Image (cartoon, rainbow, N blue to C red; front, side):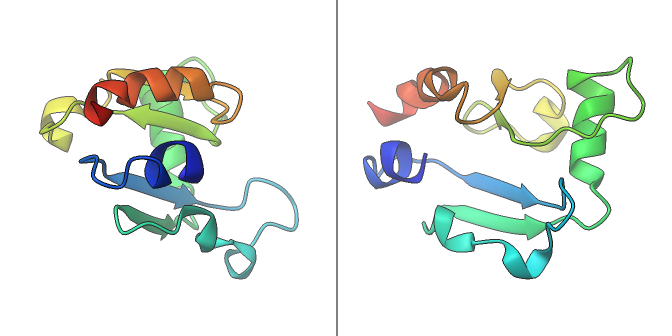
Length: 113
């Protein structure tokens, strides 16, 4: 999505928060290629405890599965929303990011016009 959305729309008022954690054996912080999202509108985090993934699973994506940790997913919020306002109510979400890229593109399209 770096090329298709961010690079293609350098003036779009987007903010991206990328949260990385170890999802598979061998994943580790030192191996994360942060250049995959090399844009000033992107803030990247390493979440050792997987708190973000656990929260999204429990609150939004899989509330009936207490062991699930959400990963490789996107959550799009309306412009101006604060966490207190939107929290678990994104305007659109999906997984996987590549598999649902058309949904992601559609969700941010109004900001790109």
